[in-house]
Length: 152
Length: 328
Image 1: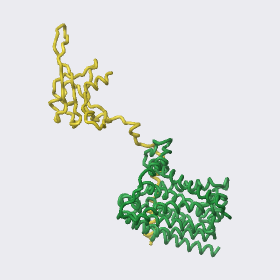
Image 2 (image 1 turned 90 degrees about the horizontal axis):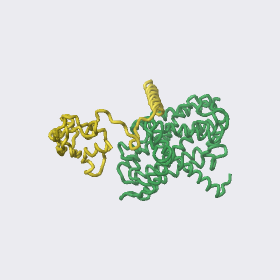
Image 3 (image 1 turned 90 degrees about the vertical axis):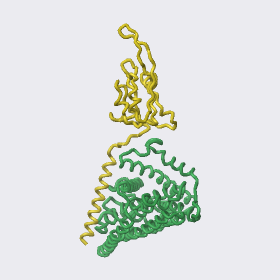
Image 4 (image 1 turned 180 degrees about the horizontal axis):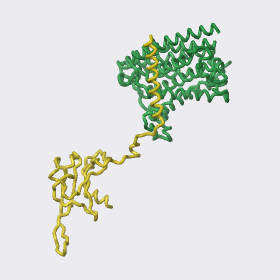
């Protein structure tokens, strides 16, 4: 009989403790992000798709060595280059300049080999994650064009 | 009191409007309250504070096709949602909101409300049986056994109050408690020292009678898909949903009248309908608060609670009150 009443007592007490917790939670501020209207800043280590880094003039730092293309395990990088004449110390020299940097994000596994292998430090991970689309073509990124758009 | 046809129509329209408005906006209040407890904002897109959500939900439900599954008992299937909503509206007829605000005051108001409340179990039974769905049948079996076992302690506590007041008239019961909160039935100095416990028993039973969490075994979605309304879509489901909230309002009103003094003001100032509304909405807020605090019980836990704890205690209080009434 004593067990009967103590069970009722401790049961009711635990229920009241539970209600106290929800009562306190009721008055705390909300913690959710209202997604389409609000977005959160991505953390420093977030890996989005790769993005070219610009130098001081806004040109890509890339020297078109092709290491990223070769390092990529999924072969999703396609580089293109053109030779341009530049003047260095009064002499005309030929220099390879990046003309095309295509990233096929449908195949990319975000392993980061391209970023690690880059000898010019010309690649970084973007912080973009709102990339949903119904068309495959939207995931073939032209990074050079994206860089120009960012510069503009 | 003679009722003309116009009186009846006005009373019915007001009762339906009050029930429907409450049902619609309590859904909103519940969703907002649940969200606050879970620390999210809840419906806030449609209109200020999401206040347009209930009418939009209603439009969505009404524009959907009403499907009757093959093999279902058509008559029971169609009758069940109506039966879920109608008794709740009928109960509003006799509830006195204030001294002068009652559609039709009856001598046996308590009895009438309990009679109509029992019909709610029939709605779940018909819905479950008529759907021809194993989950729905399981759910209605549970809901009926739950309703049967919780009606007993509820009625016993109600009888205790009726005995103490000497009337089954809801208005008389309210008026007997007038004159400050120390006259209310919940306070032990009056009839029996166990009255606060009776109040808690009555409150728990009204939770169970309206099939609210943590006693919502009739629609335990983790086990039974959606319980007795698994096969219902469209406004059939809408009526069940609104019936649940209308029943909550009836339950809160009855608790207020029986234990909390009806429209009586706790300090004796400005008695009126607002006190009644304030009390029922505090009770409803507690309903919502409880739902979002506790997980669902098991059917055994539920029946044990009723037969082993609530019924003995309420019976004991009945005897004690009877004895004390005889002595003093």
